Image (cartoon, rainbow, N blue to C red):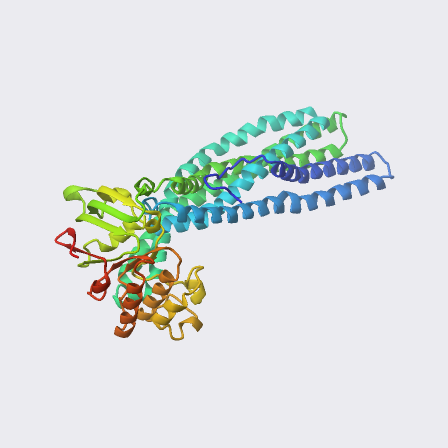
Length: 529
């Protein structure tokens, strides 16, 4: 499993060294088979007829090379890449969930979808390339050059001269590919983000008769992505095609040397065949080295993104320094809460005032829509930036890890147990809410599957069934009928002294039971009871 904050590319652990040797083995076995075939040709051309042993050796080497190519040269690094991709995706998902809310808010959803789906996949490929395929190709190249040198030193010299020529020929497109990747990814983020918006908001788009607007936006994002991808694919094609074109020159040169040796009596005709085979075999690992290095360089932005997410996960949320040392103090805040990082006329100021919650209290917060009530709950739960508050604050672990009913209520496709996210349903809460047939139903996030009231009951059951000593409730009575609302208020009142409850309310149903009532009016937060 990949550790957090650790996405290495070159990882020379013993298992990867063995895999690299396996990659090299397929090429070296093929080179040995070519040499054996060359000996057979030389023997036959000299009039010998007893070549049975050589034929068996050549056949065994050829079969071993084919098997090594499939299993050691291709499947082993491919499996490693897929394994690393999946481990990376799991680690990245954990990093995203662990990152502070302010770090998560730096990008839109499309960015994180891209990182989870594409960057982790690309990382797996790059890891297998840098840790196994490239080292294996280097070993194969060195071994093949050594074999060529034993047959004819001049052939080895040709390979040594050819290698930097191929490398230099691919440097310009490889460098351009790496630079372009930084433009491709943001364009892909925007395209994926727009795709996700259409899929998530299809019903709302249709209801608002906004099909043309969203189609135009999607076309715009698609065209921007297409322009960058077209250039990117051309450079990829250039990098993959140039080695094949240049390999003809190497093959011709090596065969020319062998033919010259043959004509001058220094070698048999079989050496011409061996020279051609070695030219092809040398080309394969050399091309793999150049192309894989270009691939790694061109896709480093993917790895940088993964490391950025890992760094975000390691970033302190800032709420750690707000820990309170007072035993029964759950939360205290005194100052001005902002909705934006900007201050003054450039920013959005929500309210100013003093707020406090003690252990076991039932606290009610009232105020008009948009006055900052939900932002206050997010702050108490550590789901915002502590810098949003200009002033002093002290928060206990109880409130920073409180059970939280958010609005709107998130719903996940599955059943009731899945939607409780690991919590066991509290029988008393279930009775209070009157779930009907909800426990037996298949649940989806579609509006026709659950009514607004059923969604609210699902969210309340999820929050109130959790064991945390503090509960934050954003509009707990929303979309509930009068009878259910009354039972729920009685239940919440009965929690006083046992659990701390902070509830945003638009009615006075909980006022009689509340220990404190706060109201936001004219951008001021004040205790009214």
